[in-house]
Length: 200
Image (cartoon, rainbow, N blue to C red; front, side, top):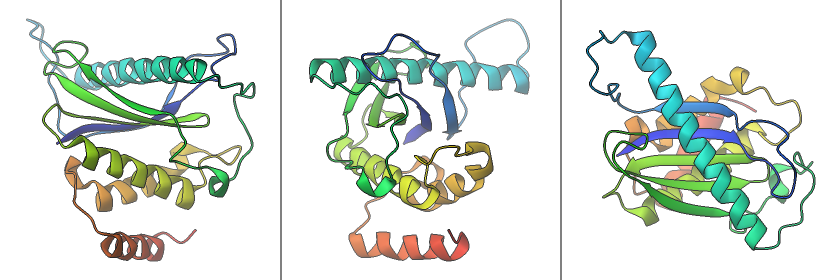
């Protein structure tokens, strides 16, 4: 099962720190209670705890993405390149996976799968026993759909105004955090259904 999906910022690898990593959107499937603590747990406390967990993952992904780009000799100096979604090749985008030990930051061990597309990071947090090939295919599919339908790389894109569309895509292609085996025809049918419900 996928525990979380997030979209966050990525900084160019050879720039000085120009800002903090920001989580632009996150969806948590299932709730993990905050660690054993004698104080009563409230909804607000659990929400803040989840927010801290998600931000910790986003920061680790950003660090790994920057290291990978530096190692490959990436020379981009513009943190917000102006490309259309059509010009982005997801197959050439930096990507990777890593494991999180229990307690760092989740109670159970997790696997994190990430994909960096220019200034955006797309990340899945999932159970360690999940099929990584299926998870990678799902992550690339989600990234493509989000870039195509929401034009996320367009300057001035407001994620808050598009949260319902992001949720619409997740509901169809990652329902309740379940990875789906989807053939191309079924993906096309779901895309048509989404396009009809949410015209561009």
